[in-house]
Length: 246
Image 1 (cartoon, rainbow, N blue to C red):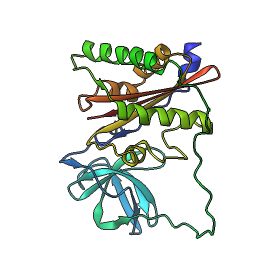
Image 2 (image 1 turned 180 degrees about the horizontal axis):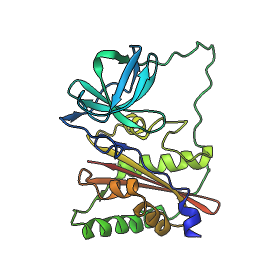
Image 3 (image 1 turned 180 degrees about the vertical axis):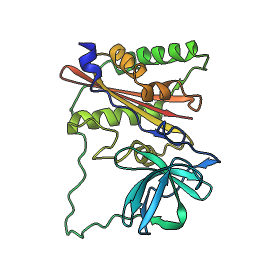
Image 4 (image 1 turned 45 degrees about the vertical axis):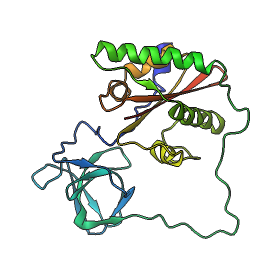
């Protein structure tokens, strides 16, 4: 049963400091104010690191759009739609702004329906999950994370949104990426990450996280000091969201 359920866990998006294992970067990594960029030249090489001496992963073409994770000197660290991560020089790209058709009465974004999902025993679940997290960190010689009320509020909103709108993804149709959602809630950070799970219990969700390299990396990261935990019960399943910041 656990193996079957573990299959629905997806690897967390790691922002600001963790990248695809194939990406080799060198230099000082800094956040970028640009969320997406578009290729302006006919051909542009995506490389494993910030420099022309790094291996070419693939060649991009005029009009291609990429998500920006940050910058290293004069290079953007980007992620493609297939989750490939690499670096492109900033001379041949420009900030991308999606063109949206004008509408007279735009439809409102979906919002969690009142009463969708149950947050009963949320405090007990937070205490249980925090215990698992800090036990794992102690075993790795790391300091404990502190449960943060504002992060927990946002994590609970994300779990409610997934339950109400019947999806399971880091990208919310209501709030956008977890990092956009954090910023909209007034949460500031240098490093941030999100883990999400859909499991039968708090314990099985934690075991699924620890068996996944991406989730485990968030839980055991030295860059994080705070965590927010959000739980929503929907039928037989528990939607679990973990938010991490420094």
